[in-house]
Image (cartoon, rainbow, N blue to C red; front, side, top):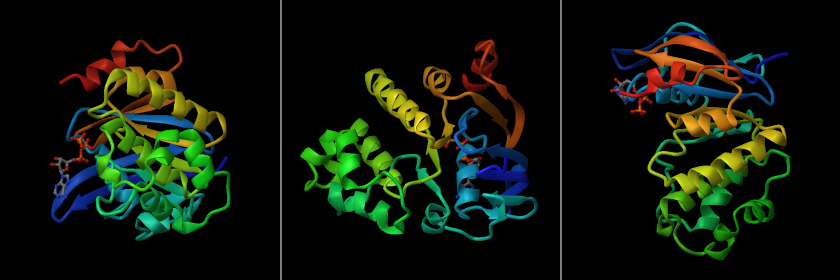
Length: 232
Ligand SMILES: Nc1ncnc2c1ncn2[C@@H]1O[C@H](COP(=O)(O)OP(=O)(O)OP(=O)(O)O)[C@@H](O)[C@H]1O
């Protein structure tokens, strides 16, 4: 099976700072993959490599088997990879509906449109004409997910979606991610919340100091194995 996303021995830099060292990682169609590791190990830099916000010097990055150079957020979404960024990045001077429409600008065919997003997140419809930043943290996360889904992605990359959210909201996110995955959307879940990881992911990678140091299946794994890589 050709992976949707494949990083092969990727080395990524910010200016002269060498952050990713020979990172090899893949996500196949419909897979649910977690990328875990402590703060500052390079997880967001994996996302930034996908979006060409960190520079690749060495290694290859492929979407659907095709080597990519220089796609930004829009190009990645058009190729079927949508990102829910760390910190959500809701556009403050746009309404909720305008934020969603921005995500739909790529016009890939699929089940997601304003009506189906509003069915998934009724609160977004109720408040559709208010600024996106007027929402609570959990609701902003739903808006960021809705905006990414509007592009009808094959792969959704979620960068620390549970950050700063109450456990009850994290439970709702787990249900939503499972619904999306059950409907065939592949997930790359960058997380430190073990409960969310174990409820959603089936396979994992652990990063430390810019390298993948462990990988495997979550089924049957002693969770202490992952815990030691997350707790500072
Ligand atoms: N724009 C940048 N310019 C230079 N260095 C950066 C930049 N962004 C991140 N870094 C550095 O790259 C390293 C990896 O950061 P990255 O954000 O990828 O880590 P992370 O695992 O996602 O952590 P966190 O969960 O805290 O976001 C860190 O040492 C960070 O200081």
